[in-house]
Image (cartoon, rainbow, N blue to C red; front, side):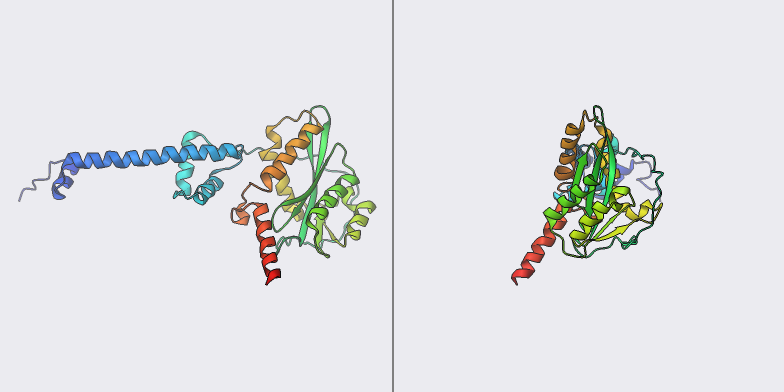
Length: 290
């Protein structure tokens, strides 16, 4: 038997089998493609908006989470494709590493021992200092204190000098706003500011347990190191600060306006640090009223 469909176009054959006019098939195809194109245009527009709102800090995973939270039904791969097509990418710049100090370092107790796990806020805080350059005032210094549970920067201090007073102010700021319970662990490196008599007395007066990195082990304080790296990738390396005052304003906007309250964290199930803290406080209040 001769196959009457042998020399026919596959689409024509399919239309005959389905008893569907070819014109209807092409019209359906055109409508499907148009719908997909419209969706892609809408998605691309929203992707650009989210990317701009984050000042270029968000990559595909976080933009995808943002879209899903807004009700869009879209895969991560599709978001990646659309971003690649438009040349949209996250900011990634290598962080500056200052020359290490040559001071003699004495080992101290490492209570934290790289155990970054927590059950709630105000159990374990980590602290560190980073360097920020300005045109008029040269190097300035940011001391930060992070809660390991919420990843929130609970306190910070910014100064033109790297003194013990800098780290005391950061701790005082964190303590006054969060009022942690006794036996809170505060972990830092072995820098002279954190091992100074004045700082250790301040810690003791607040009934905080002080913990330190081992000599030559920056990974013992990886979480706060990571925050300072993010700060530099997303903010500092993209701005030229005129002086101390202008840098201070930008840092406040980044830490309080962006990082704590708007920046989603994969390790927090794409919540912000402030969201995590708020949820814990609401749950604790509800439990108290029961």
